[in-house]
Structures are given as structure tokens and as C-alpha cells.
Image (tube, rainbow, N blue to C red):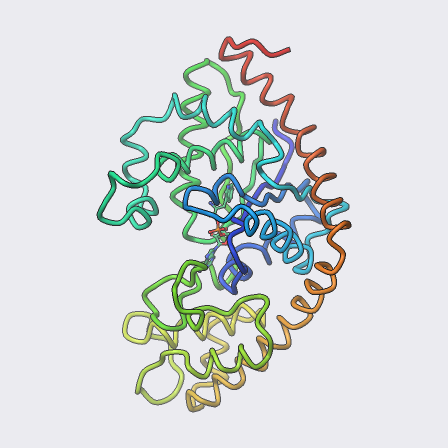
Length: 332
Ligand code: TYM
């Protein structure tokens, strides 16, 4: 009944890292062969925590360049800044009126980000998953490729779509399917195998950025935390850091984790790290180089974003209008 359409997004808040790449963006690329794809720079989401306006604007460009360098084709996929399409915020209001607080209270990411002092957290940080639901539903997206950490938000998006459909006695919104794919759905910090690799980690040594050069990648893997157990073996519970490196190796080389373990079973950690460095440099350096070239031509990038925003508006506005009509709003 619904046309297959993929939507996903990334926050333009600093450099993308290996987690974003392996958990999400890399999986966006093949959908371009089979689906209509809409990929968004989520700047509305970014301001749920303080952002410098000049850096935010530039970061949208840099993130767009990263997506293109990773293989997203702006001629076929729609790439745009979320803030350039008002339907997201407009639909979010309607959906927020249908979302019980109890559903939001369960969101673990809010609990993690707000920390102990919840009273000081912004309302936007709390209602962020409702905006995410609006991002997806305003395109009638059917498939949403994301990393493991977004799973709970996507389950909520399905619940919210169902709540709208029930409230207005329709089947207007599809229930979007989360697509959590590949060997590395949750890449962990290089400093702590129990923490997710994240842009907001204070230590740059905790992550591999898509802008890192070969030296930086080598240094980071060399310093990556490991353990004192001999050889390379899979033990996610007791060897989380080694498990993370095995996962990264498997994802980068498109093989199964078991094959990586077999290949390096007798190797010393330092030899494994060195092979991983070579692999990461080989895979990431073409992306970094392409990003650099794209960022030299800011006018072209801005043109891509402007064109993407126009196409996104064309897709979103009729759906928003129909949703408004169902609600009883005025919009012609
Ligand atoms: P963001 O910007 O935190 O991350 C972008 C994508 O990268 C994935 N990811 C990871 N995957 C594996 N390992 C990691 N360590 C890791 N860190 C991040 C995320 O799961 C995500 O897929 N709220 C979203 C952006 C967003 C969105 C949407 C996504 C806004 N609206 C609608 C899908 C649909 C976010 O903050 O992603």
C-alpha cells in the first residue's frame, strides 16, 4: 500500500565517526539501488543541547560532504538540512499531543543525556523522539536504517504512528520498519568497551573520525584499550574491547566475526591492531580524501542542500497537509 521509502538522519554535531559509518551510513548506500531515499542532516535535533550557530551551519555542510563521500548520491537520494523543511516541526506538534508522557519516560537515551538533574534538561531533549517520529512519518517512510542505539526511538515511532491512526480512525501512517544491519550495529569506545563510540566523548582517542589521517588512526588503535589475555578470541563479556576490535575488523572487511577470530587466533594483540589499522586506513582514506575535495567547493555543497530541501518539501508538504486535514486543521 505504501511506496517503499527509506529515511534516516544524522546529527550535524562535529565529525562523524566509525560508529556512525559502520552502524548506519554505510548501510544507507545500497538502499539507493532499490528504494527512494531521503537522508537528513538533523539540525533541529542538534539544538537539544547547546550549539554554536556558526559551527552548526558549517557542520551541516561537513556532514553532507561526509555522506556524499561515503557513497550517498545527491542526484538520486534527497539530502537536506532538517531545518529547511518546516513539516518536521509542524507534524511533531500534532504527534506530541498523542504521545503519553509514560512512553517518553521509558526512553533510555534521555535518561543518559539528562543525567541526574532532570529538571534542568530542556523540553526538546525530552520530546526529541517525537520529532524523530515526525521526521519519519512526514515522508511516509517505510524503512529506517539506523544503529542499535536508535532502536527504542524507532519502536516509539511505530507506537506513535499507531496512536495517530487509531485516534483519527485511519491507516494514514505506515508503521516504519527499523533496519539494524551488518556486523557492527553498536561500535564501542576504543577507551572503554562498555561505552558506545560517541561524538560527545571527551577523549578523541575513544573514536576514529572519518576525518582522521593514517597517523591518527594508527595512534588511536595502538592506544586502544585491550586486556592481558593471550591471542584473539571472542568473549564479549570478559573481553569487550577485543570483541569491539574484532567487530570493527569484520565490518570493515565484510566478513563474519568468526572468520576474523579464526584468522587472528594465534596473533598477538599488537599484530592484530596493526592489521586493523591497515584495513581502516585503506577503507577510510578514500572517504576522507573525497570529503576534502567536496568541502573545497562550498557553493556546490550549498546548492545540493538547497535542491535537497526543495525535493524534501515536495515530498513532505502533501503528507503534512493530509495529516492536518485528518486532525481538522486549516491548510489548503
Ligand atoms: P546520531 O547522529 O547520533 O547517529 C547517526 C547514526 O549513527 C548511528 N550510530 C552508531 N551506530 C553504531 N555504533 C555507534 N557507536 C553509533 N553511534 C551512532 C546511529 O544509530 C544513527 O543511525 N536521532 C538520530 C538522528 C535522527 C534520525 C531521525 C535517525 C533524527 N531523526 C529519523 C533516523 C530517523 C541521531 O541522533 O543519530
